Amino acid sequence: MEEKGSISIHTENIFPIIKKFLYSDHEIFLRELVSNAVDASQKLKRLSSLGEFKGELGDLKVKVSLDEAAKTITVSDNGLGMTAEEIKKYINQIAFSGATEFVEKYKDKGEDKQIIGHFGLGFYSAFMVAEKVEILTKSYKEETEAARWICDGSTEFEITSTEKSERGTDIVLHVAEDSKEFLDKFRLENILKKYCKFLPIEVEFDGKVVNNPNPLWTKSPNDLKDEDYLNFYKELYPFTEDPLFWIHLNVDYPFNLTGILYFPKVKNDFEAKNKIQLYSRQVFITDEVKDVVPEFLMLLHGVLDSPDIPLNVSRSFLQADSNVKKINAHITKKVADKLSELFKKDRKAFEEKWDSIGIFVKYGMISDEKFYEKAKDFGLLKNIENKFYTIEEYKEAIKPTQTDKDGNQVALYTTDPGKQDSYISSAKKRGYDVLKFEGILDNHFIGFIERKLEKFSLKRVDSEIIDKLIDKGETLESVLSEDEKTALKAIFQKALNDDKLNLSIESLPVDELPVSITLPEFMRRMKDMSMGGGMAMMGDFPLMHNVVLNANHPLISKILKTESEEEKAKLAKQAYDIGLLSQNML
Image (cartoon, rainbow, N blue to C red):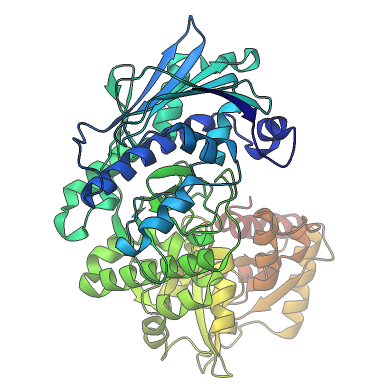
């Protein structure tokens, strides 16, 4: 048998196109060829289980071998193999995928997720790195002779009979000069570990098996223990500390999705060092899962596997598609349900994990309305004593004491307990509670909570004088006359050499600071936003500070009574410095 012919494709120069555009990443030639070899093995397994192949299956395995001297890479399998006719049909007619026909033929024999539909184009990725490709193949069908196909990357090919004793296919790549980098053992091993780590048939390279054919997500959650999940996490991410908990996904309708998502211990940053990996039937596709996974869960770790996520011809880019949207919504729901279940089952353990979980929950509440609806029952607020409340519990807790004259609730918070210590002490002395908002997202979360809740506002503990915010039903009598107040203002303006000073005099308890420095809440939020890169830097903040003199403090009375102008100025400066010091502004 010998035959020559042309590959029937609609353009003479498909190979340059394949090389340049079809696959952005040249290393995936190995993924495609090994995946095809795995498919050929699985199809034979399937035919055997249907009784259509009566021979011995033997030990199905895919072997990748490198011959540096001959400049070849060979991918071998002992699967289905092909006849010369099938080569012509599947390899030469590029638009015709062998798998399509295979699935058609067997689709009524029961759904089998092991059939992958991409033999055809995947094979042509070989020409990204090879100047010449050979196929040596022998079909599983009795009485067929082995065939050899050879093509040098033009549209010309040649098919001849050949000797091959074993069933299966060898694909030999004669590596091109500009792809010599792939003739390197370590490079090939790393590519195999990246893309083929969990392929369902053993893959051997350099004498050792490089994959785990039965990864954890393919097993039933009922058969697994915590230890199994933790060991698999270490397999995915060596040298990473244990995760907090995980969610095992297992859906087959209305789309197919399996996987395990782990909640890692998150430090207060948005650096996702270990990304979620996306697979399609155990073939690694990408770790850029932005559309599939909701944005607020991008810091999770783990794997997702779904044949229902549409990929373009190179399987490397997700396309916005209704299945992807459904999967995204499903993951959101599963995560919300899991968090809710953990909260109800063991609230104390949930609270202990809050510093790591909180970042996901807050981000989810802000960015996803459906998630917020569920999360408002387990999203927590933490106060300065490290006591936790749900939002509703907190509103109830501060109801009697923290309302203003219009009946609005006012919650106080700190962003830096050390820096705002004197203000916190002052609030606590009056029996007010102070929440802690120290996280990277909290600036956004504060505004979000206010928008969601009616008649509820949050004020930083040092943003304005507490007694002005909260209606105590009483005010202290001032010990100063109006003339004394005017004189006091003049002393401070002169001492601080600033006649534009935003200065007011309040009657506060004797044990408060003589001078308090505050920033109006709206200004302070603007400042925090600009520091977080949320907007262009605003002008000069210090001009906006409020300076409040405590009319009832002995030091303020002493300043008024002092005879020497120089001494007055010195004491006024000292009182002002105490105010600056309490805000870490000195």
